[in-house]
Image (cartoon, rainbow, N blue to C red; front, side, top):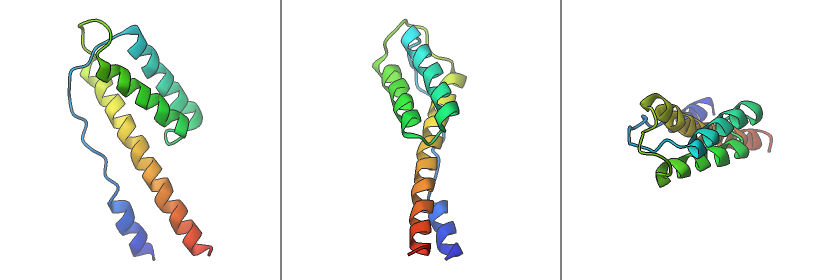
Length: 104
């Protein structure tokens, strides 16, 4: 059973952050700050954090704001955080399934 769990967990992979240009704007900066705060308060794998990071991604993808780009560091943090949230959600799903099977 432990081997099965390890095999399932090994399937959870985080993507390497990719660089792409994005627009800097007050809306994007505010959404980024909000997403970081929500992740700290509610947990990185919470539904609230996932929604907040989706909003950041949508604003960045929409290209709203000025022509200056978001720094690569900030962009990598956003991409990495979103992937981490997805990986944690999958980990929680796997652990919950295993817990339910063990207690059935």
